Amino acid sequence: MYQVKFDYEAIDFLNSLSNNIKRRIYYKIISTKDNPHHYFEKLTGREDYKLRVGN
Image 1 (spheres, rainbow, N blue to C red):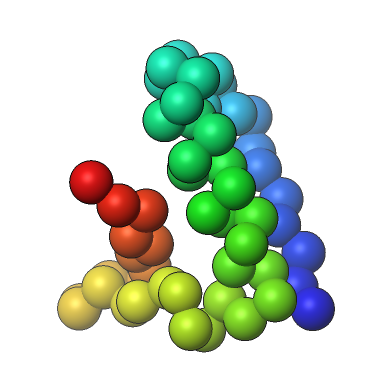
Image 2 (tube, rainbow, N blue to C red):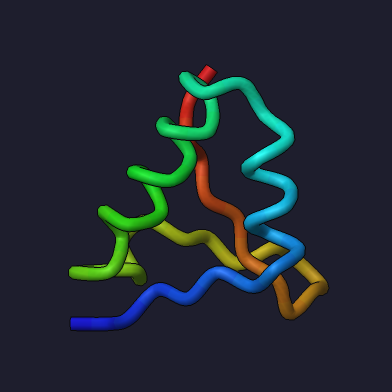
């Protein structure tokens, strides 16, 4: 199993959101630690990945 770490910038961003959106994003990220390769998709031409949380 993998470990999820939030940096201060991510925490500040989450805290700026409404509670229901903050919870959706947080729990989606935490749920990926069992199998992150299933959830994250590499962005073309970049070193970054994306995670779809929903509408």
